[in-house]
Amino acid sequence: MIIGYLICIIFIILGGSDVINNLKKSYFSDFREAEGFVVNYKMNGSGHKVIFAPIIEFEVNGAKYRHVSTWYSAPKPPIGKTYRIMYNPEIPTDNVIKNQLKGFIMIIIGIVFMAMIYFAS
Image (cartoon, rainbow, N blue to C red; front, side, top):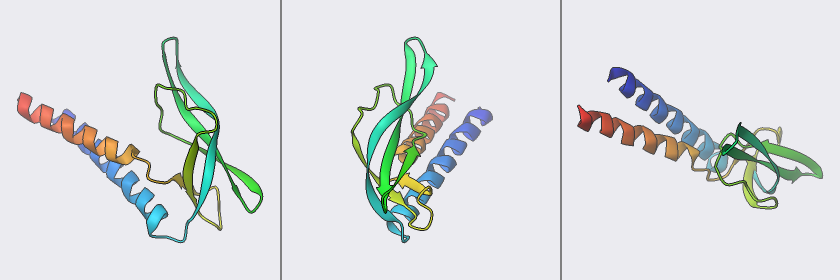
């Protein structure tokens, strides 16, 4: 039971860290915004259990950069789908997807499973 709580706490901490990082870069820094497009995707898994993460390309001062998402999903991301990318104008490889919900989802998962463990005991 304690291991379950620790796993939930890790989810909440990692999710909170992701949310804070995204908010700092998106709203509380001198990061700039660019429009990015899905140009490809990474696949993970095999057979019927394949998941995909978009590879998003964006342009800064005529140079193209890529953001490789760490967030996988079951539907394949459509090529050409647009995302808002927040990037550091000094180092455009330092970037995040604007308003990504990954951190919030991790926090919710941690809280839900913590409640399930609590009420099951």
